[in-house]
Length: 230
Image (cartoon, rainbow, N blue to C red; front, side, top):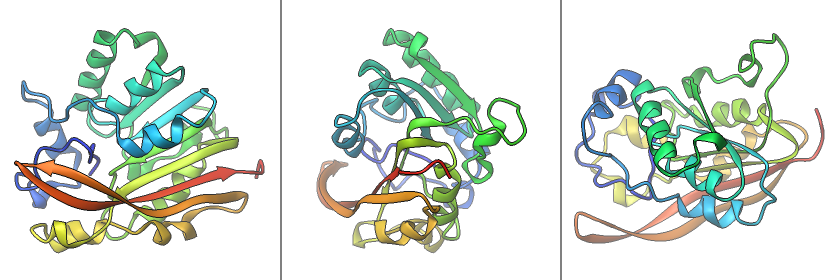
């Protein structure tokens, strides 16, 4: 369900039947080899580099590459994922990178994400200066509601960055269910609550190399800022 789309080795080896379930990702992260390169996603670097570092939340963090990059660039970053094996790997990678003291981890399914449950205080949301997710794709068009949920964790004046795959021709080998989970940036805008200003709504072109072949793809990129407290 969540992945680092900038560093994914191949789309051919996914089990479509279980792709959206934590059990599949638990198994995937149980092996000895890393799934992702650890490099940060390019749209995160492009946008977060313009912001003053503060607190950040990366939902669907996988092995923690984006969390570690944020921590290395002055942020106190929390990684959230529904795979405890993925989070364990991420914590190990953060320790190896020397940023364990600037990182935290949150075991949560994005489909059930609620910032009000983070600190155990009913009705009190834990908020962050930057909330981001990269290549998180929820089933049945669920990313609009996902944006709404993630927006609840953005502090006043903070930013929400959501990046994903668009269902273009490059992904024709995937199942219809997987393709329906992808989105265009403009399709996410209705998920922004009142008090948010959309700053970037773009299909950003990017060239990737997978299995020795070059592909031109578009990152569906939504950047919004919370301008009011409510």
